[in-house]
Amino acid sequence: MAAITRLEDLRALYGEARERSRRKVLPAIDGHSRTFIGFSPLVMLSSMGADGRADVTPRGDAPGFVTVEDPVTLLLPDRPGNNRLDTLTNLIDNPAVGLLFLIPGIDETLRVNGRAEIRDDAELLARFVVNGKAPATVLRIAVEEVYIHCAKALMRSGAWDPASHLPRERLPSMGEIMRDQLGMATAETQAEMLERYRATLY
Image (cartoon, rainbow, N blue to C red; front, side):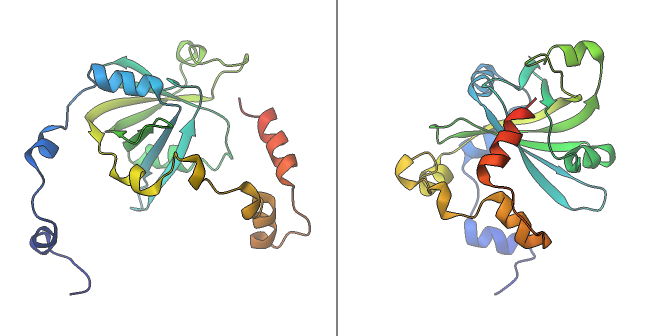
């Protein structure tokens, strides 16, 4: 068999989920989930556009940058990026989002699914000022599902093990990659890029 298109064929390969795996999905943020989010400096945010194309983007800041407003509401400030607005554009058409919270050094992750709206309320933006700068918008996420995810993927990857980390010089700089992909005459150096990023983090 090549392409698997029927659920019964898929289940024949994998079997049923364990009862614990089915029961662990919560409808709201409990104390353990709140603690995990409070320690997390990095979340992967997924969305889907009206055309059915999926997208995922990393969002990061100081640990706890995503605020638990209440057990069914998260607030996620939108810091400066490349202004493509892929995620925000998707949310205009389809508010469904998935979030994967990570904590460096911890192999478990936390998954949250829900629906997001883009807010620019002045009083809300003021809550997320850093270095005197407010975000352009804040995502207000209505939580629908919350669950802890097992450690196997992070264990297999060795992502947090310094011995497995690739030295940066083993890859071309982003400037070199962009030069080659876009046919540019020159490339921004890694040092120049990092300096530009530091100046525009907020």
